[in-house]
Length: 216
Ligand code: ZN
Image (cartoon, rainbow, N blue to C red; front, side, top):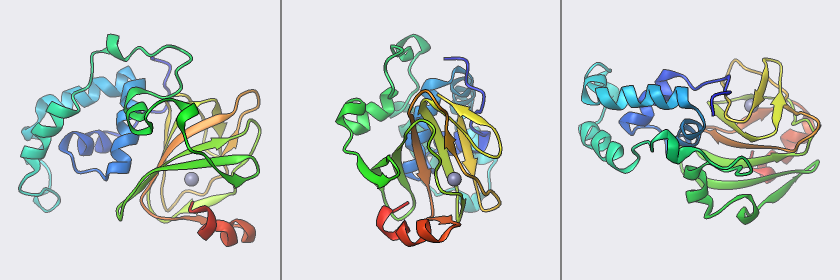
């Protein structure tokens, strides 16, 4: 799949290769990489550099076992050759996500979060949360900003916000400085895989009230 327009930054690919991203972000990166030849090529170059990349980074960020972790990571999460990654067109979930969900979209245990939107939390720990988000075609999410980093990968359909249009394979990174209102495009329901490392700040009263209940 080469029509991905919004690629992930090198810093996340390096973090992934080094094995120090929170697990929730690991999942989004591996799903993105399996949908983007460009990201896969960059990741492979970082993995080839291996310890060389790590030694060039700040010591403070690198634990003593990082090289070990990197090597283990390369062994266990080695990126598959492109031919094996060519998923059928009707396959919404890339392999790393199918492994976590235990199947395809039909196996997801969705929870309604209002306005026709649904979510399913796939992984949550003290560092970060990964969830699937289903937004009906034409539906907007509440305008929000972010306390931390929000990494969104589109799996089906497309959405637009104040910055651009994001379709299958595209990644958008939101941070403290970004306020946006994602709106799913007409025509196809939008499914995204989202990792967040802090709770989002919703900007209108009702969504803020609902936030503790929705968990988003
Ligand atoms: Zn956001």
